[in-house]
Length: 343
Image (tube, rainbow, N blue to C red; front, side, top):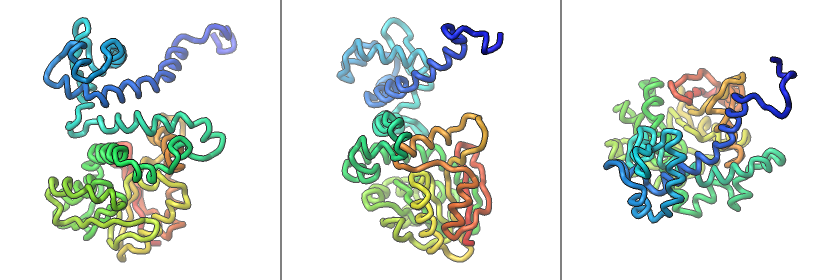
């Protein structure tokens, strides 16, 4: 049967089911957010518990909590092993608080600010402006600086993301020719710690805003590299510390082209002779294949007015900043290292 022969009142069942599943995405995000906020995975790591015990421990309404857990169990997050008794599954275990490579911090972050900002996507599409500032009354990073609790959740989410990617990034690039690696806007130091651990001869600089680097020392000390990593605060639009290798992970995608070029130019101006700039981002590939970069691009749009970019778009940014894009190195994950040298 051709598409033209189908009755308008009877959509094809497979496509209809797929479309309805896609439309349910917002409910899944919020159910995961609730589970993370209540700490259900940590409560259940000792073994299955009845719903009433979970409700008593978390202070939640038992009936409402059951309805959330029933939804999550239907997609493999938790399992109802008997009537109103729930247990962890491998997926649910990833929501534990202190699990290396867990996603609890990301669930808490995605279910709050990005979720609310994405509700303004239509307005963003119509105006070209990011929705975050309209929803929260201030640009994203300005809002975080004014709200310590939200800033802590953001830092934890970014550290978790860096933890998941840092080992692959450190192993994907040959740092033997480098002497000092400067991690621009490196947050709590997860990436620079992985690079320095893998390269004992290197020294590092963690560069970020004052309220961010103020909390980085414990992580660097726990990684055993605090004596090789200097903490420097500042504004990357004005200047950055001198070094021969710069790493910028998930930084340029926060900004439009004008600001991204300014950040790269700051690096180019301070880069030692023979130095390299490594932009670590998800590169958008041509074609219709699904890609995490395409979804992340929408979030950057509504959150900051930023964007993910194609290889050609990165090449143009580099040229405008006085750099030459030399190669793009896959990390084995969703991100690539986009290497540039002074033109």
